[in-house]
Image (cartoon, rainbow, N blue to C red; front, side, top):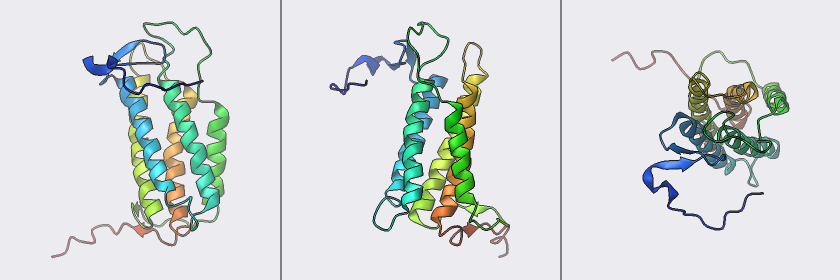
Length: 198
């Protein structure tokens, strides 16, 4: 159980932060950057939900996004608990499970089933929900790049399910953005070279 009754601790005033193992790392550490980007993606999903959870909202999509937000906290906890490091893990850490990846794939397929095939790339925009979901998608891609870089760093480990989850996440957010754009009817399509002529 998490208990947060004191918000500031002053322990980060020296430019370090604590991992869940108690190990201190610089705030610019690649692991900290990775779970920071995951947190940022979560905030962007929360912003999108302002347009999916209200009276005009799409309840099915909002429920999926709520699950994604919870999973993103799981992913952050996973990344904040390195398998190797200065401090040994003495408990069973929370890790992303393959079942979370499978569920995300099923929800991608569910949302995508009713969408018209794309004939061009989609510009981020349309409804407010779609624009925010596209923003969340780009942040999720950055989180993925950081996680892959971390996984390739000597002495660091990122689990295969965590890498799969973050990869599927950006696909889910893309499809969710199209779904939020009137099931794709409101997509703003890229017209290559449209503004080149004087």
